[in-house]
Length: 405
Image (cartoon, rainbow, N blue to C red):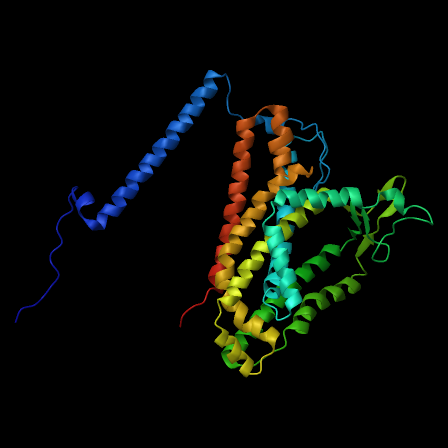
């Protein structure tokens, strides 16, 4: 009786790098890597040689010099005597602020519009279709300029709020003022213990998400349906409200008041920030709406009918049956839209909003003449933030993807 066995493995030979299919792919990849590295090395040496010939040396010492320019909106303390590094940091925070606000708002608008485009109501469906076609087919820069023009030319000036016969008035119990200089809102003032309320609230929000996740898993595992709406709201807000009153109301509000030629107190949200924020959100929301619609349509209609036959309400069907499966189609393009929002925020310079492009890539570059250094820092920032967004969203995409049994 003959015993079959694997043929003996031959000794490795250099010729196998090209002739053996087990190694050929790695060989070509290594060659391509060496060529790319050589190309970048050549470009780098050529750049260094040209800079030496011109008497220039790459140096980032200019970041420690006084900036000597003001920034109209800051999230941290800043004045014109601080260095360029501080000004660049202010620009980074302003970029992250408008990008974060636009991403959240665009997601909300996109989900609402995408679901509404599939509505049985003819008017709602056509209105959402008109919104999608109008906004995604017009450049975002035009929408930024349109909204900024509305904020500066249409809104009333602070003097219109003066006197008994004022042409304009504040809203929301005289706490918010819309003017051509921006929107004035109440400013929170934190007394000792105020941050404890914030921490408790954030913990409550995490607890609310955990409860909804637990309720969903319990429903899928046992079929037991727990209420999700009011328990989640109670977990998020009730502990923070209790701590707020127990600590003696450590958070108060400073309301904007008209004083002199402008409003005093409160927080001033500049019209340039609002224009950039809403333009990016509304423009990108139109694209997200189409992704949401495509994701919902990718779910078999039979599953919707089966869920309805079990007695589930339409909102339960959407939350428990359709959206969990649609997310596998929605999330991948959503990552690209978030990246586009972050990169399109560099259009802030068109309306005078001082983001990183306006500070480091604008005034700092012009004052110091360090174009190469400033551009390298800009590239490093946008590359870092883009890779970070991609990494976070890819982790989330993996967590919501359908897993076969």
